[in-house]
Length: 114
Image 1 (cartoon, rainbow, N blue to C red):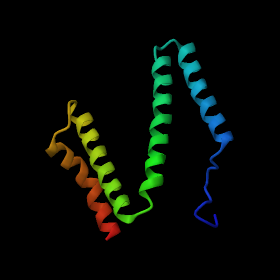
Image 2: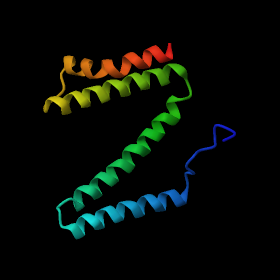
Image 3: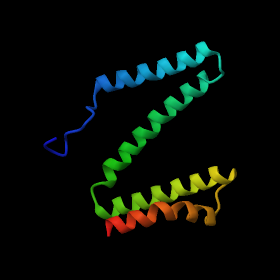
Image 4: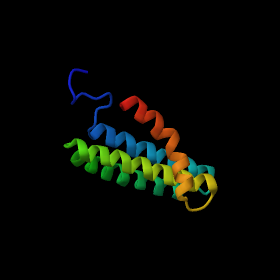
């Protein structure tokens, strides 16, 4: 890699075709297995594409300034901690649960960055 534009994975039409084919294979396998997950797999695939496209659009805007990048990282860490807290306790995440999930990630990260 020689520049920022270089990537390990080339983004283009071939990648889009591969992603669609893999999603179709996953749906077909679940359908053939008759395990009831075919519709969920299709829904999850579509949702993932939409979410990643939205994330790419936001990142394209956010990375232009340092303060926006920092704010974005903090927001993403808090949302991830809140989601994790809710999954751990089996209901909506609480502030104390969120802080407990955030501390193991934020602490080492702050030590490394500062």
